[in-house]
Length: 341
Image (cartoon, rainbow, N blue to C red; front, side):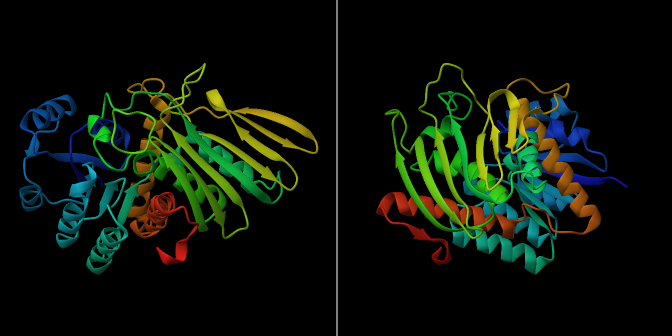
């Protein structure tokens, strides 16, 4: 049987999710919801989805859903997640998941009380190169990891496609850094302490566009997570995340153009870890687009097997706590203990 789902929010990124749902065996999107009638009609036409709603309450009342994909912006997440929970419909929700830890905990509690799965669309850890790095760590080839760096530095004009990003008091940590911090958790484990510094270089935006964060992980790893949309390079790496890892017996370096170099006592091996390019994808976005396919496939598998998703709402609270700790550290100049968040 195929699971019937609805997508709420037909904006900039939702198109990628709809393409990915079309590839999904065992699940399909049967209805759309968006408050903008022109956008709703255009997306519905492009993807051949006839059942369309301007109101989420009407969507849940009019459809028998097996899941809902919430692809709206942050301010609407709590109300929509809690609405889905009241209707006992499993949820996959776009990141950033919540505007505060209090909101995040409330959404998790609502879904747990209703007995419905809640997954956050935290897709960067599902990128093919990042999965390859994790596999290299797990192989044991470089020994015990003691240091790492997760780096995203670019001058790409992200505001042209998402102009609202220029208007918020928070920018790069909340929008992009949350991905990088989740990658750090995925590769090195949960963190105990955080020290962060931020800066706004672009005078045309309100929030920070540069952030440097130092994490002390429970595993003993020290990691640096750095993000910038103010870094002009000879070759634009967008949207690639670069990774450096040192272990007791070797190193891993994930560089540009999806080349990963693993070095140990026997020498160095260069591996091509590029994501596959599906027919609807375009470079360089295919890196992210392919990860959308991977995370949505994971969600469907978890629903079918009744198991908790890797990026469940409860798990994502730990990533959200890192975001809050980063802003608090940057504001106060202090090192923040995650236990207090």
